[in-house]
Structures are given as C-alpha cells and as structure tokens.
Image (tube, rainbow over all chains, first blue to last red; front, side):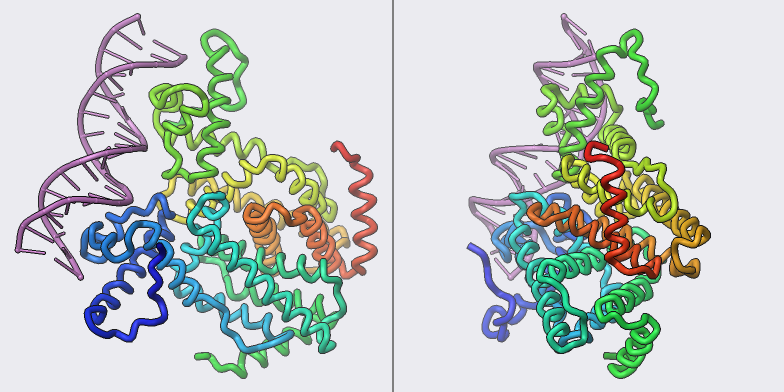
Length: 225
Length: 225
DNA sequence: GTCTATAAATAGATAGAC
DNA sequence: GTCTATCTATTTATAGAC
C-alpha cells in the first residue's frame, strides 16, 4: 500500500531522472503541507510549484496520502538529532540545533502543523508523529539516566525523569511556535538560557559555572559544526 | 465590519431566540474549527451539527470569517486567566487552570490549531492570536517585576524576565500539545512540578519549601474554586 | 513519464420563497 | 429567521492520448 522509496535509490534504469523529480515534489509538498496543513494544501498548489500537474503527482505517489508519507519520511531524515554526545552534553546539542532550524522555517512549520493535526484520531500523520514524540522522550530519558549514573546529575525518580523529559519537549516545541509567530525573538538565546538553567538545576551546580562550560563546549565544536 | 455581539445581549425583541441560537452555532463552530482547522472546517459540517443549513450561518455571521471572529471572541472570554493574585502566587494560578482545561478539550484544540495556522501572514486569526500572546507575556512579566520588587524573587534583567516569560508560555503551550497527543499523561502533575521548580529557581529557595507552600495555597482556595 | 480532459464530490456564497 | 435551490469555484482522482 505504502510506496517505500527513501534510502535505496541507486539511480539505475528508468529511476535516474525520476528520483530527482521525486525529491523536488517532496520538497514542494513539504512547504505546502507546512503552510496550509494536509487538508488545506492541495495537489494543485504543489504541482504548480514544481511545474507539473496533479495527475503526475498521483502517478508518483498513488494518492495524496502517499505523498504525505513521503514528506514525513523526508522530514524525519532531515531533523533527527544525530548527536553522538551522551549524558550531560547531549542536552547542550539542542542549542545549536535550534540555530539550524531557523534556516529551514519550512521544516518547523511542517512539524508543528502535522503535530497539531495529528491530534485527531484519524489523521494519516498521527502514527508517525506519536512514534517520533516517544522516541524523543525516550532518548532524553536515557541520557538523563546516564548522567545520573555518571554522577553528573542529582538522583531523580523515574516519574520525575519522565516529567522533566516531557517538559523539555514542551519547551522546545512551544518556543518554536512562538518563533514562528514572531521571528524577531532570539530563539537560540532563549533555548540556551533554558538549557543552562535546566542543567544547573539538574546538577545542583551554580548557573554561571554551567554557562561557562557551555561556552567552552560551543567553542570546541567550531562555528561550522 | 466586525459584528460585535458578545456581552450586551439583554434578550430583547427579535434577538430573544436569536442569541441562544447564536451561542449554539458558535459552540459547534468552535469544535469544528478546533478539529479540522479554519480551512478544513466547512460551514456544512457546522450547520449539520446545529441542525440547520449553511445559509443560516451566513445570515447570522455574514460569512465564514465572521463566524471565526465570533468563535475567537468566545474562546478569549472563556479562557482568560482572570486571577486577582499578584506576584509569586500569580504563577501558581496556572496549575488549577490546566485542570479546568482538560475538561474542555475542544478549547485547547481550538487554541493550538488557530495558533499554528496563525503562523501564516494572511490568516484571519493571526491578529487575534498575536495580541493574545503578547498580553499573556506582558502579564507574566509584570507579575515577575512585582515579585522582584516585593523581594519574593531574586533580581533579573529585563531581557531575562522576557525570556523567562516566553519560556513559561512555551511550556504551557507545549505540554498541552503533548496532552492532546496522549491524554494519558498527568498534565496537572507535570505543570505543578514545573511551576514549583521554576518558582524555587526564581526565589532561590529550596524546592520542598516551595512545594509545601503550594500545597497550602491549593488547599486554601478549596477543591471547588 | 507526462500531459489534457474530465468525472464526481464538495466548498463558500447568493437568490428568493415562506 | 430559516429554508430550498442553485451558482461558481475548487477539490481529489481517473481515463486515455502521446
């Protein structure tokens, strides 16, 4: 039923040009779905931006839902936090991540639009969004446990660990919504302030000490990293 | 241009039954717009739920956008934090507020759906959402300043005050999105934990002390308040 | 592989009867 | 004040030519 494509693509035979076209369509659809939502974004609008017709889109992705699935898979591949940092430093990786995101406003719009729509039980993006959310919370929780066991964080109960992870997800999602509504705010500054405050609270160490460490950490990974 | 109605309504003359009908329509429209968004929610769907026709809706509200405006005004009147608490205790009022909200899921869906859509420059709900957001942040900032001047909170720079207010808004919005995606989470417990942690951080006092004060504060306003 | 043409359903809005 | 009927535009999806 679903057309699985992302990941194989060795550009052989008739797919040589098709794959490039496919990426163009997915990119345009990503912007349109992010702007107008799944129902509000029409195949017509997407086709016009690529310079083709709705019929061609259907020929590629079977139907509108198939196109949405391709968009979500591309979004996941582009936004997964692939950091190799563990324990305390893992949480610092969320600071430069926001900087990257501001350069791709479309990806943030897509994420928030799909998340809000996925609130409805029968929305096609719902399983995707829910799984993604759980993965993020699980990753945060594991890194908190690792930091506690390494003596970096003060001990916390499993309930508090889950609450803290959910609160961090809430902050990151909520502040991006605020940024979309008012791009003038200092997104990276705010997130950095929050991560430093939170790490100070989790470690029980003074804020200025944590902030100095974050400075060093940011400098060590270089401006272009 | 806008049809101002909410608030006067002394039920005189031909408006006697009309006002009741009007409220029914606004309530149904609130649910539909919250579920499917502004573009995705059709006048037909709303009319069916009220047991009438799209033509009647237009007769009441001129057009679809007029109906949306009425919905947003009703939502504002129903969700404004009307607490008379100032300074530190003002921030505790956000805890029982979430409990009230979970009983009206439709209002939360409407708020998040409209906020996400209002991200688009030409969305009819945009001015409304932006003003509301600014009012909330301003109210929080003022209460933080009051608490600092009263010696309840440690001093903070204006920049940090604004950042902290924006972060609190982010948490409250983000955690409601998580609750919509998974209503099984303990929304009130998580918000209470966050408010206690935040107040402890702002005051510089130990968490258990703040938590005990919150217990007393919650008990003093009674279970039905 | 991509197009034109079109089917079938649904959208917001209007006209006019009662 | 509320309805039926209808207009015009737009939606997703299909059929078939090239």
